[in-house]
Length: 183
Image (cartoon, rainbow, N blue to C red; front, side, top):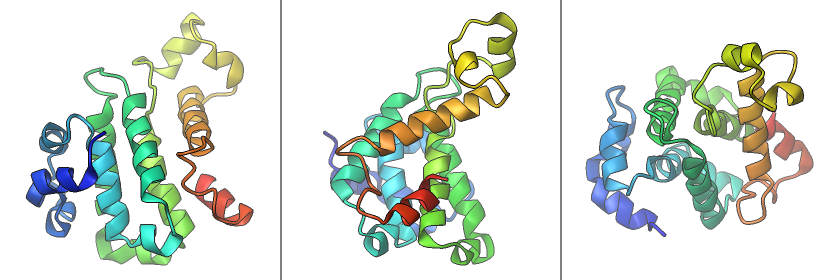
């Protein structure tokens, strides 16, 4: 299993606070030094940047397992892949850092925002929801018949992973706080 400190040492400036604030971040370069697992390293660095791991008491081992599983849950397609997810995560982090907007959020909301960026396209089939609906080729339509089929599916995958033993990074929080992260 990839050690996060080794990754940070190899990534050098890529995961520095200064570089995390730049819009021209290169997720492909990070993937190259992270054995193809940019989500794992980037998510932890961003959560550290915002102080979420310490303030919320997030278990780093569970977080690393969850982020590894998230990366593995992305396809190897040219677009909906783990590098795309890392790019969206970084852009979301930059966006919410503009004028310190993240300071307006409770920790649970900020964690939910970060998790949403990570999981936004997980297990994407590589075609649009319209294609799935038109051709009726996917069981997802039966599960989510009223539109936003893929978005609901990505959310289902995310919530399922968050509830898995060993990856349940919010299980130690009150039910109210868990609900704020997950919804």
